[in-house]
Image (cartoon, rainbow over all chains, first blue to last red):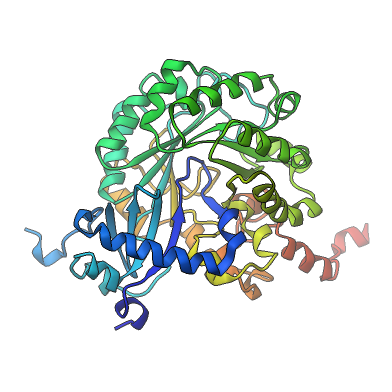
Length: 71
Length: 393
């Protein structure tokens, strides 16, 4: 069991906004300006927000069933 | 909210705030999800599918920009409506959250909004980049279907003509005003070249004046018609070192969200931001074939719109699955085989060697990005290798 993944429920990362471009969004300068403090605050706030949205969570892009369960 | 399982736990797509949130397995369980089959595999940096895909709907455009990266022409190829819908169905089945629709000029396609509606219907958020040259109030109203819309503006006033080869600034500004009347998520895309670099402040000031939500700064790439101008328009070493502090200054000065595209990552990491903060906020370099993939007008899948091998057709379910599961080795293998000085860089896992397309244009796909300030410094310390043939001659 991986301690970081299976231990305490955690937000591992956040990418705010969406990208309309041909190249991927690499650096959102705004968030690097505020550094670690903002990361900690965002992690706690988004974690709490996810808990309140728990009832609306829908699985998306589910993995295919394992071979033994396929007809 | 939509949740996609990944080896580390999952990715949550939030509508408000608009964000993709990576969570661990314990948080997935807390949200009510059973253990996923994807958690049984080995730990890897690789996602099960991209989170965003750039769909090049066409290489058709009549604007004739001098440095168009897809070499668009008025008769360029286009993905048909039927194939575009099939592509979106396939991407949704793999759990892709966002598509960036572009071209060419996607607004010139009379079925663009049908494509966008279809994306919404299958659970994908469509976003758009346009030059905005033919924008009308009615079209702007229909653009509400998109998430983020960015209008390409490479200079203010006369500088627009200098960058693109025609005078389209007034039309682009009109498009921004019309779009902003209809929605908040409207921004500007600006290609940063050697000649436009000193004037980036004018673009950010324009975005502030029009109450837009972001400015995205895109590195000039040696692709399409841009390849011919790359040597003269690539950033100077001073500009490469200065782009990140300049973007920070513009963010603070104009209180505007400024973003730098993936190919600028080496220029950012040279300033040594804290790695865990960068990782947390998704500050990364080349994510071709992992976070990002592209679908071209002939249906072929590539790791990046600017280059990389054809990985198969999006219209072929088996080829698509193969590409996402085990393809894109031209992008995914770089970290493992990175040469000096990338292999001694603390940021290699985030940066991934910078832009492969620039590296290839300068000689070799597998070499470090030659525009990286650290690479330039390292090369300056290496003894000059003289060809024996030159000496003999």
